[in-house]
View 1 (cartoon, rainbow, N blue to C red):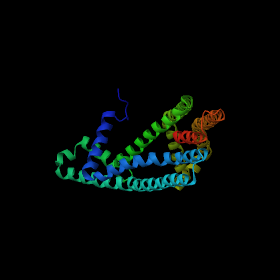
View 2: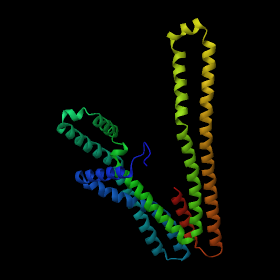
View 3: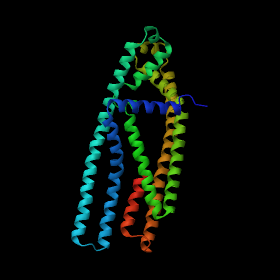
View 4: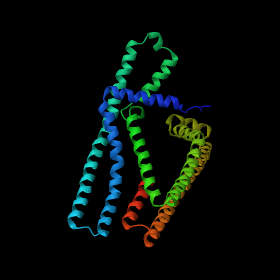
Length: 306
């Protein structure tokens, strides 16, 4: 059974496909740039961590200067080209996608209004749908106007995760297992903190509204006469302090949950990097891992975590 407030999966998928079809019909080049952006976002950090490995491998192999300079220069040139293409595609993603999207959807909305019967426009269900549409068309950076950009980020992260997982697993599966375990622990703590924040949102909002209402009353010059007349100053201060203490208590509980999650996150990072570094160093010292591969894998661990 679908929970209230959750978007059904079929509705989400239909919205994504509808948005992509509109971009495809309006400007196919934007979707092509999104595809290029996925490749550039994966390639740039990968080349960045691969370059030190290549340099160290060439030094260990005692390559001749001509081969060394040619190889390193080629990789550096590739890095510059990929960096330029990533900057270009990012500019289109963060500026062009939303602008084209909101203009296109506004035109579609206006056309529907022009062709729609007046009786239907006054329908309650239509007004609900119109309110949702207006909310999504508030500005060009709204999520509904940037579905291709969101899919680009999601796909590049997924491909990067698979790539770095494969690199780390190729060296030793134990490292990958430990990294996934640390990520699972961090995710569970983060989920716990978010569930607590969600479960106490109504209580904290109610206390905050009461504080704001009392603050407005106590600052209102028109109420000063009644406060003095009925001697309510002491009582109002006591009630305000009581409400403020209750609000601070709930906020401290939430802060405590967030601090627990952040401490566990920091501890997992320390254990993850420390254990991985120690294990990789042990492999290098025992001649089971080259120095270039050590640098490459250790950088891949950081990339996977981010």
